[in-house]
Length: 329
Image (cartoon, rainbow, N blue to C red; front, top):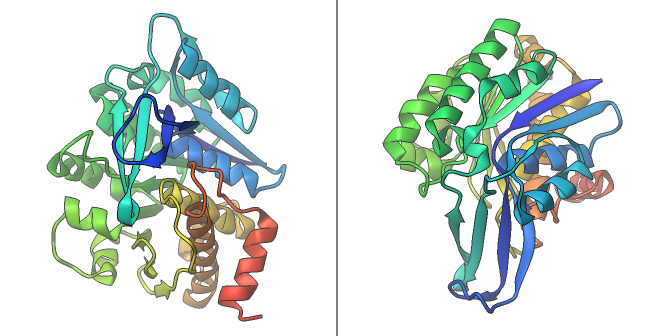
């Protein structure tokens, strides 16, 4: 059994079905939105019974908290109690012309901002991978300390970490993000960042390939770039994989879908993710190139529907797109 563990805040997202700024009388899709739970749900969708996908959090005992708990518990394993007198975060997603999307949050002081290490610790000691994002340390000082302690625990137990930057400018400044992420990215076996995020946070004016080498620290660096090619660097291989063309509807959740597909592909090869770093150059390249292809497919197809996880493809759809776009069959 492979155990995947993640933790962080999930909100109820009111996704507008109209163009323009928020209108309380407008039509909205009620969905759940959380980078960490998105990855866990997506990973579970394309995995078999040999993978345990666990999401950990705290929720307010309100309508939003109950919706999240009922939705997530029907898909994956969950450790997230509902607390009386506390609130669950809310996200408003609005769409504009030219594929512009804007989010507004009501999450300050939410139940999830009180996630402490004691809640996480019992569940990561036997994990095969801990997935974290740059969102969790941004929502409160307590969550920031929880991230640091979780990373240290994983280092002590030799548990691999995947870290997706997921920069949210509404939550903290680029300088705050840089200072925090620089303290933990060297501990990540897999470090993923969007090219636009790298420029906003580190602002070095580098190309995607140059950023991949800049971030490298005996780990796997992934640089995504929206619909453009994805770059990976592992210290020897610099891999470039073109994305697949899709009809863009809603890009929210694409990065989380990419991570799920990428992680699933690696787990299909080995349960021990850190072992990949010791494989010879050619074998490592084959494994990681395939993982990017699958990640690209998952991320791209997620953009074809509204909702953070509704567009996540099935294994059959992934195989079909692999044949069509990467194997030319």
